[in-house]
Length: 63
Image 1: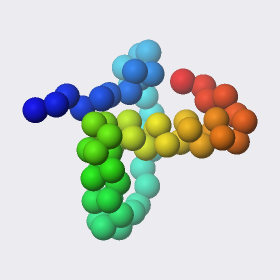
Image 2: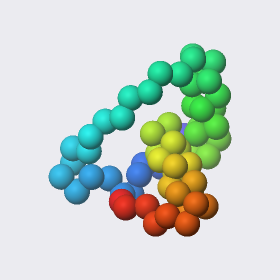
Image 3: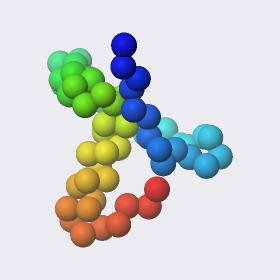
């Protein structure tokens, strides 16, 4: 059994604000499968995608 990669840039205080979105169960299942294939938690996978997109746009993400 492999260990899921967690976000190395987690909140310094241990309590980062949450962000909620509504998506269909089918889309969530696709996200979860993609995250699992990368060995990541769903939250870390989504944060990685968002950081990569900011980099693509020329924006330095604040972690």
